[in-house]
Length: 285
Image 1 (cartoon, one colour):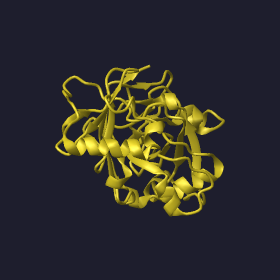
Image 2 (cartoon, rainbow, N blue to C red):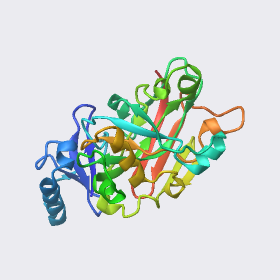
Image 3 (cartoon, rainbow, N blue to C red):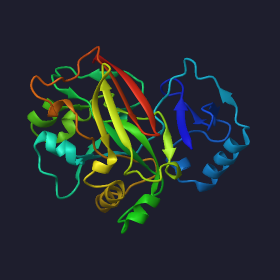
Image 4 (cartoon, rainbow, N blue to C red):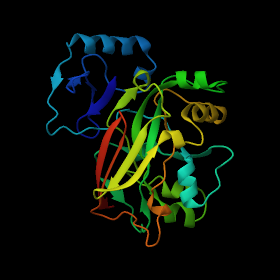
C-alpha cells in the first residue's frame, strides 16, 4: 500500500493512493498514520480490504498539500557515509561500523514543503536517502530476517545538511543536521510488501533541473537489514521511528570548487524508484 497524509500543517488526514492512482480517504477507518497503526496488523488488513473493495471515499488532490506520511515520529536515526561511491567522492575510508547520528522529529516536513536555508549558512547541501519506517518494537535483533520483519515500509527522505555547521563548528554533526525543515519525508509510506528488495532501488536528485545524484541502494556499505539490526543494539526502535540510510555520490560537498551549495531560490527535486517524488523550493530562514 501507499499510505500518505494530506491537508494543512497540523491538520493532515490519513489517505491511500490506490492502484489506479486515485487518492482515497482513510479518515473513516483510522485517525492517522502513526506508529500505533503501523504496529496493528489487524487494522492494516482492514485498510487493504477496504482499498481492494473500492469503497473508500475519493479525495480531490487539486490544491491539497501532502504532509509527512508518518505522524508523531519518535526519533529519526541517520546513517552517515553509507555508500561506497559517496565515501570515494569525499575521500573518506568506508567506516568499519555504521556511523549513527540523530535528527529531531521536528525537522520532518512534507515532501513539497519549503526548505529554509539557515541564517549564516554558506554550505547547505542536498542528500537523497531511502528512509526505513519501523513497524514493531525492535531491540537486540539477532538476524537480518528479524530486522526486515520489523520494517513497516519505506519512503523518500531528503537529509538536508549544512556542512559548515556540521564539520567546521566543533562538536557533533547535530549542528548541521537539525535546522528547521531539514528532513522532508514522503510523499508516501510504501509498505514493505511492495518493496521486495530494498537493495535494488534507484535514487536521483536534481537541483534547478540539473541531475546531481543518480545512485542505487546496491552501493550501500551497510544494507537495510544490517542497519536496522545494528541500530537495535544501541537503542530500542519503536513503531513509527524512522531511519535515514545514507546518500549516494553527487552531493555538493563532493564537487570541485566552487562547490554549488544551495541558496534561496533554488529548486530541489528527488525521487526513489517506486517510492515517489519530492520537490522543494528554498527560501532564507
